[in-house]
Image (cartoon, rainbow over all chains, first blue to last red):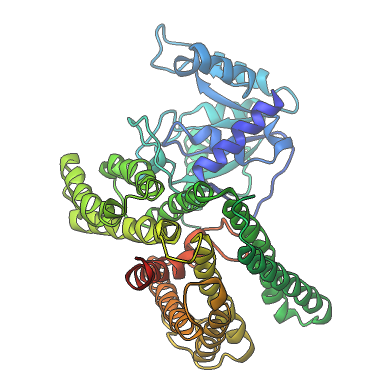
Length: 204
Length: 314
């Protein structure tokens, strides 16, 4: 499985031509939640493949159960990426959001990291949508948790929403310094601060 | 091994010697000069030399494999160059399918036409058929915003990254009486063109004072231009034995290659300045992207091809 993971990571970097930058930050093996903007099906695999191998092996994506819970996709998601599958709010019957948080906390254990797209769904690439509250509840459960923002550019041009054939562009991934939940911060304040931290990386 | 023409082997031995000497000089500079302000230039120089070893090895390998090797190599370079180029364009969501055609239909088709030696179609596929296809497909997509800008910038990219670049391996199509395999001629073009770039850089770093085009490229100086073009032309003339040319013709052709190469470098730099980037990409360590390395080839190859075809074929 390590070999397959390495091959997938290499292919993802080749196809996306991703140029990875760590600005005022550096790869750190400590438990972290990497959160990024979401515009393409390629987002997760490109972000995952851009992490150093040792960190990548412990970084698990949080993904929508309805999208991944099928045949080959499921096999890859579970066996290679060790995906944490959570039900989306649109799912029927409507899931209990606390269950998803429990599931994430459990998946993180003491030393696993997560890759999370807090917008919840793919956007057009022009604006970063408001964050869903999952990130906040996760931080409440694990107060010292490091959140590292990663801004993905051009992946929506490689494989936009609604297209099935990719076109090559050079993409870029910019990581920024970590943030943590402040003791007195409200949910709305925190989610907006996290979103702004991510957006600031766009033009750096 | 049937592709190993002795003249080709001599030329590559020369390249090998040149690389070895450059690496030695790079090493000496690195250990001898401790001035902090020179460190960046020296480490960039060493990165460039390292990349030259890899590029030369890849090019030699594809030449030994034969025409298919060269076509695959240049086909991939076209794809990578086009990727660097379109990344800088203001493309829209509606251009996705048109771009797919550019990358995965027109690029392979162009190199296949060289492979089957269909010169008539090779020469017009991009300037006629792709030229008309691009705006048609964009019109069908239905987004009229900045339509002319989107269509024409993509057409221009296809001309540079696919059409012009494909003229280098297209030399393999030429049947020159009493000359043998044209692989030597392709190596000759690449050698003179790339040496001209290198020598302009070297002369510029050693003596460069007067900038030619400060707005477009701060590194291009008159000293670099004259020194680089003169020495590359002299080397091109001295290599006449691997071409169908006489020494005097070889000098004239080399001068044409180097001047076209300079024009290519200048034009492609103007695009970078317009888009506010320093390099097209980061693929080749120390050099930038494929387009940063091949900008001069894109302009030199078509002219060189047509000179040879007009005067030496049949």
